[in-house]
Length: 424
Image (cartoon, rainbow, N blue to C red):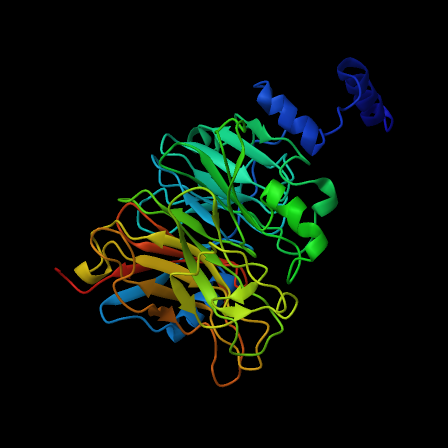
């Protein structure tokens, strides 16, 4: 009788055949493109929203300084959280990382705190995914050297298999020889023209002269635009060192973006940038300018070409300006409506650290440009006495109720800022 279990298991193997190997990431993608299952378990792993980590993050939020009447709370524990895309119909927040994970964050009870955080499309190994939504609910994911699209992501995300397609195949967003660990994170936006816009950071501190022609041809160190199916690609803007934040103004429909500037020039130069690109073909300052009007050492002896566009806003040097969004809600007081919220991740290239905060730039009512100074809105993740970071802020996004989400890739969290000051 002691051999019966073995006999039964052998019989099962004989009837069912050998176990199928799990598909590779590429195989899984092809299965989903054909509306076939990948064989992933329906018991999907989730990230714990309670416990020691969540408690520690909440405790650290007591450090954060906000204007009177505002409140900040932990919205979700999300490992390595970076750029966010809020689903236009469900409000589910899709969150990219600089690793291989893309997270789906759900507030099922609508109490403005996440009930569930789980891996989106777990059979796919993403490479530094940066998500963005089209108004009609297509989730685009710009990776280091590929672009995917997930139609009806808000519907399919509950399970492991999702409708998927390829916009730009692997190895065709940039030449494979230009793949790099440096400045490789991509961000995207679907513009008012219904085209997909993607920023392409270049991998150097200052791009070398023998690369300039190649980079301009492919839009590396710039911004590219294409149809949603990947066709009709064009270089929209050049002279950009590494933009990790792009957005369109809701009224003017024009593009605004941040740019991270040259390292190694000292604590106080060059400044970071917020730029305006209302039309295609504009050229910004790189590589002749390291930020603002500060010339780079590598190109100091060259005469810059005519027609370069300077930044609209210069920010503190090396604070690492990242994601940005125009505020269209009604929850915040009037002075914030129509203005620009932007994230500063925080410096590594300063003897005195700076950044790790959310900034605010007021805008003219017609959306033509800033109407006042760019000032801190939420700060305190940087301990100014010790130089220690309690978080590094990457992106800002707006929920349907008009509150603001803030991502932190170091603490691994998303925060929610709401206005508690009463009628306004």
